Length: 198
Picture: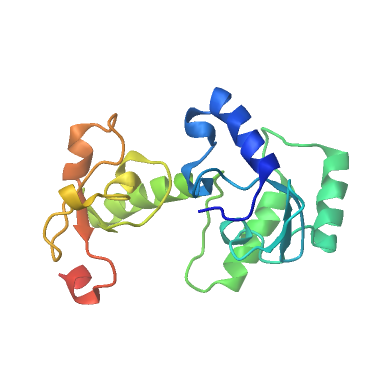
C-alpha cells in the first residue's frame, strides 16, 4: 500500500487506466492503490515523479547489477546508439558477449539471447521437455515466471482453490487460459524440498 502522498503518480495512474488494461503495462508494478512512477535513477536510488527518493532493491528485477545510470554502461550504450539503434541482422557484439558469458560460466557452453524473462522461461520449458521426453513441468505454487500460460499456472491461487497443502491444485491465472495447460503442470508447495523431490 502506498502510504506517502504521491499525487503525480496517482494522476499518471488515472491517465494510464484509460489506455492500459488495469492501468499498468505489467502486473508486477501495481502495489496498493497505484504504482509509483519513476522519473530517474542513479546508482541504487530512484526518484519518483513526486520527487521522493527511494532505495531500489529490485534493480529492474536484477538486470541493473551496477545500479542505475552507471557511467561506463551509459558511455558504451551511447557509443553503440551512434552506430545504430538495432539490427535485424546478426552482430559481432552478440557473438562476443555470448563467448564472454560462456567463458565465465562452466555450467553451459551455448547460450540463447531472448527479449524477456518470459521468453527465457518459454525456451527453458521447451528445452526441458525435449531433454526429458516428458510433457509435464513442475512449478512452485505462488511463483512468478512471466506471462506465459504454463508459467502463470498457480501464480496467484486463492484460498478457495489452493487444494491440499502438500499437493496444491494447478490453477490457471487468467480466464483465457486453455483447459489443458493446467493438466501439464505439477504444482509443488513453496519451500518444501522433500515434496519437490517426489
